[in-house]
Image (tube, rainbow, N blue to C red; front, side, top):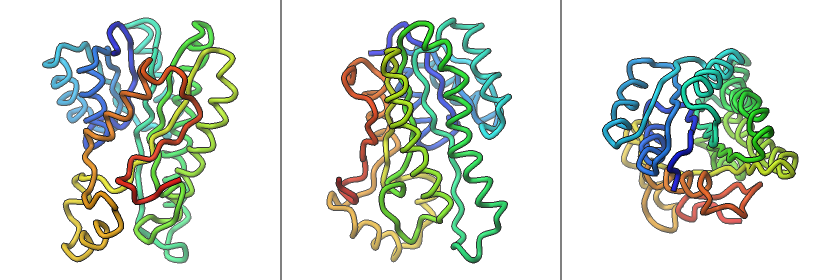
Length: 247
């Protein structure tokens, strides 16, 4: 599905990001992987190479504009044009509104929202010049409906990512560039594995399909949105949450 295409994936070291990298590698893409841990990034890159994909890594914090610039420059130098950008990097904080330090609020927005903007701005000029490209932002169902487990900073940042997705889709459509988002619900990750049994049952009780999603299932949605299989889809914030939120 992605043979001959180059994809950037941020936040690729573990969980959903790692699954996305591997799925795009299976799809035939060349990969430029970003994350804050160089050692974990190299592990993912090697796993992608075992699948037959070319992969390089650029470590750095997505909240910094120079990280996005470095990733874009490395991709252009090694592979030429960037066809796909997956903005997956994100963080959360569990503090409530009154307990939350403002620095925590700012950090979540810097990573989740500003990081997405930095990477989009790094790749869009070349995509515009080529008249093609696909951007997939990993958002959250917390962007669409509040729940107690999502801190205000996280939900607000992801709601802003959804708006940015729709705005860019409209702005970039004349240039042949599609911009979409996937909004996962509860997914099996290292974090959810630490949930107490009673809380886990509470979460499962809110999911009509009766189970948590897997990183691989979210990666499948990203692959669809990144590929030409979704050539007539843009500006969507696609739910992938087992029915826990429907619209």
